[in-house]
Length: 342
Ligand code: AQP
Image (tube, rainbow, N blue to C red; front, side, top):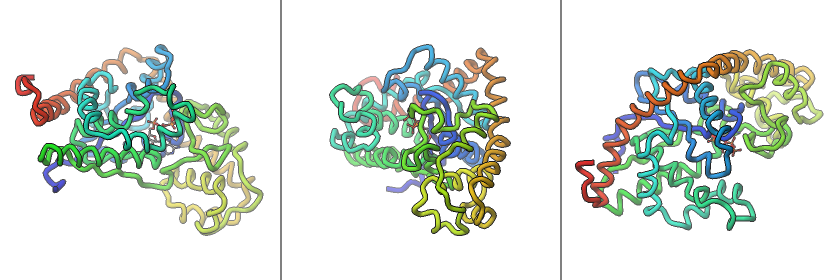
C-alpha cells in the first residue's frame, strides 16, 4: 500500500458545541491557519453532526455554528483559499459513515477513551451517536481522501481508528482506495490544560468558566482568568525538565510558547527564575494582544449572519464537488446498484 497516489489534502473540524476556547485555538485553529497555503488543499468543517451526539439546544447550536465560522475567519482562514462549511450541508459525510459503521467493529468503538469519558458510568443512556462518533469522524476525513489531519493530542486515538477503518476497508474489498491519513499533532500546545486543574484538558464542557479562556472573552476577563490560574509557589525553571512535576506551570509556559510562536525551551530561557507574580502579567498581555483582535473580528462578523450563511453554503458546494465522486466510487466498490449514475 502506498500513499503517494493521493494528492496532499488537509481536513479538520471543530464541534460547534459551545464556546471556542484557547485549547481549540492553539491545538487546532491556529494550526489550520498555518497549514493554509498553495501547496495543499485545505478543507475545514464545523462538525455540527458530531455536536448533537450530546444534547444541544437547537437555537444555541445554530448560533454556535455561525460563531465558530466567524472564529475560523477571524483567526485567519480565508474562505476563498480554504473550503469552509458545516458538516450537515454535505450529506456524503453521513452516507460514508454508514459504510464505515459496517466496517468498524464494536470492540474498536468501545475502547475509545472519549467514549468512556463522555458516556461515563451510564453507557446505557448515552446516545448511539456518541459510540459511533469515530466512524463519522473517519468518514469526514476519508470522504475527501484527506492525507493530513491537524488536531490536538486528544484526537490521536480517533485518528488511529480512522487509519484502521481505511486499512480494513482497503483489505476487505481488495482495493487501494482510501489513504492512510497522517495525524499532524505538533507545537507547544497540543494539549492545553484547564486553568484550574493541570491534570484536566481545557474543554468547552467544563462547568467552570474560569477553567478556560474563551475566544469571545474580553481583555479584562482574559487577564483575570490568567491572574487566578492555579500555580505553585516556586519560581519558573530555566529548563524543560524542571516542569515535569509541575503540570500547571508547564501549561502556562506552553501556552506562552504557542502564543509567541516559540519553543518551550526558548520561553524558559527568557523567563526562567521569574515568579508567577511576574510571569502571569506577561502571559496576560501576550494573550490579550493575540486574542483580542480575533474576538473583535468575531463580534463584527456575527453582525453579518447572512454573509456567514452564504460562506457556509458556498463552502458546502465546493466540498460536495470533492466528496460526491469519492462516495460514488465507494458505493461502486461495495456493490451498490445504481452507484455509477448517482
Ligand atoms: N485543550 C485542548 N488542547 C489542545 N487542543 C484541543 N482541542 C480541544 N481541546 C483542546 C482540539 O480542538 C479541536 C476541536 O475539538 P472539538 O471541539 O471537536 O472536540 P473536543 O476535543 O471534544 O473539544 P472540547 O472543548 O473538549 O469539547 P467538549 O468539552 O464538548 O468535549 C480538536 O482538534 C481537538 O483536539
